Length: 108
Image (cartoon, rainbow, N blue to C red; front, side, top):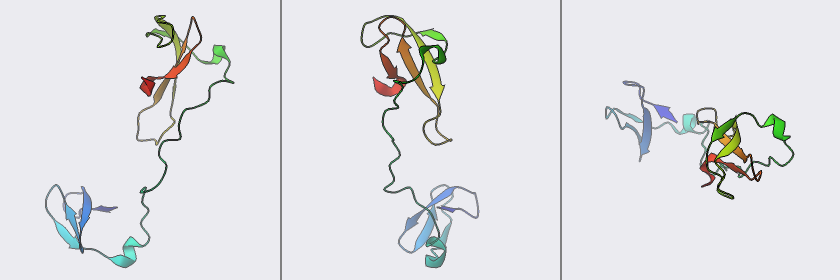
């Protein structure tokens, strides 16, 4: 990752140049410097569903008004967890107070 010397925005590569998408500043790419850069390309950024089967219901937290996708009940306990990178928002996990179905906010 390269940042613009003029405005500080993230730059993108275009052939042998780094180009700033904000202010159009350009500079030559440096192969030696780029060899030490880290990329997220090809990394698994979604670890899949989180297993909450062994979490005691009392630990799951307060209740809120939300419709259970399984039984239609309108109350569920919820818990917030940071499961992705620190710069991404937390994920909210729900457990239905009636049928105890578990889901996370982005599942439906």
